[in-house]
Amino acid sequence: MLKITQQKRNELFKRDEVSAIKEGLQTPKIDETKAEIAGILKKDAGTIAVKRIKGRFGSRQFIVEAYAYDNADIMNRTEPKAKSKKADAGAPAEEAKK
Image (cartoon, rainbow, N blue to C red; front, side):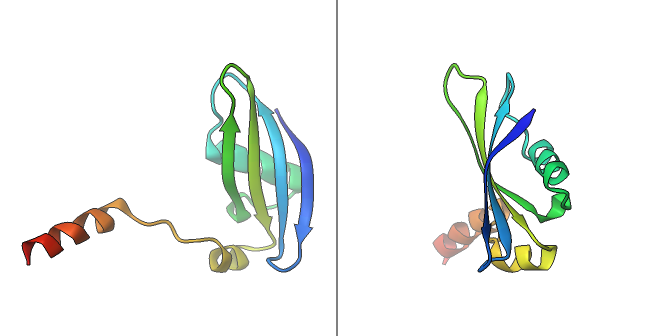
């Protein structure tokens, strides 16, 4: 079960900044957490960006920090792009050959 502890509106980035606590035996999956936050906030799961899931040793509580954007276009412009491991791994090897 996910319980939202703090929700703050950031008008500059057109998003809601959410802090929540989730209880469980294992670290929650990002996709499951996105779906739960989307259900609570009544937004599309594609507009949720989970920033951090932090747990403490021996505790069954996990702190979740996420951003809920107004739409996917704003999210794509604001969120950093993920780097692919294949592209990064190939670049140093090509430079070494030269």
